[in-house]
Length: 74
Image (cartoon, rainbow, N blue to C red; front, side, top):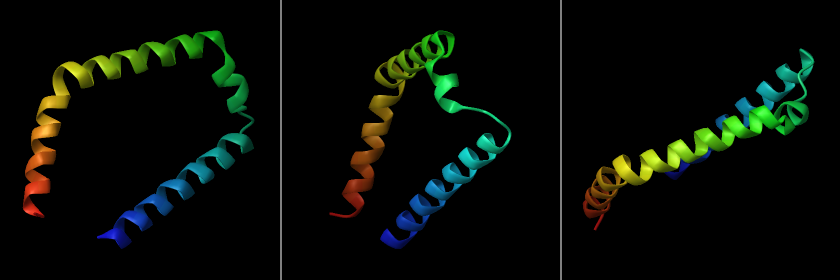
């Protein structure tokens, strides 16, 4: 099980690195994009929305499911 998680993490890191290389190849500068006030405001809005949805809708079912999964390994 640990082997699968490690290869999944490695694949994700490689995918991110490749995506950054491709974006750089096409002339996109992530620093300029992220430092834009409009993008910053959008990211803050989306993050606040995600936190609100997590806290009001998802947290209880997720914790129930996590408890059931942990109960399988006790």
